Length: 254
Image (cartoon, rainbow, N blue to C red; front, side, top):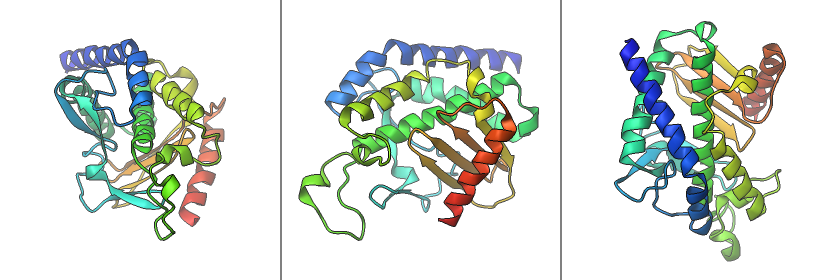
């Protein structure tokens, strides 16, 4: 068991090193060509596979589950929502990390998590946030579902409609670059109070997020839900919990 943990730690460290070394290369390519078929983790063009935005194991590969983009009201099935990643990063390095997370989610209660385990969960949620941003950059707005087709905005990336943040191209690229940079660091000391872990008995998978603000994911197979404030830090966990509950209430009542 200890040896497996050591192997996972080594592979996770290798993954973060790849992200660090390729930061400029990957971001330059993505900015120049939003749909570039390169590994978004290391920049490789070899053995490209499809990395799911929401891991298949999280939503149990349920083909009936759909992600609704609130910017254009268009739906996309979780199973088809992917970005490119090379086989080495996706299957080997990231695969080892996610296998560790699955065991962690299954075997430990939120109150039992140590600092390293909390940091791993935060990293994972930050990574999902990064993938969601890339998906918006790679997806065309098309039209607001149920609304009129407006030709001059149809081919603009969804990311340019993020809403109440400044969504000039420069700001969009800066947000994605900053989010990717968070994946280089393992220590999430300042973010630990920004993570909320809940026990849940809901029978269905639930997910919602707001770009660069927060993410919520509920997984019935492990009877847990996770909420993370991306850019807010809290001195006390109870303050984060109160604000989190207000967000959840607002989302479910809307």
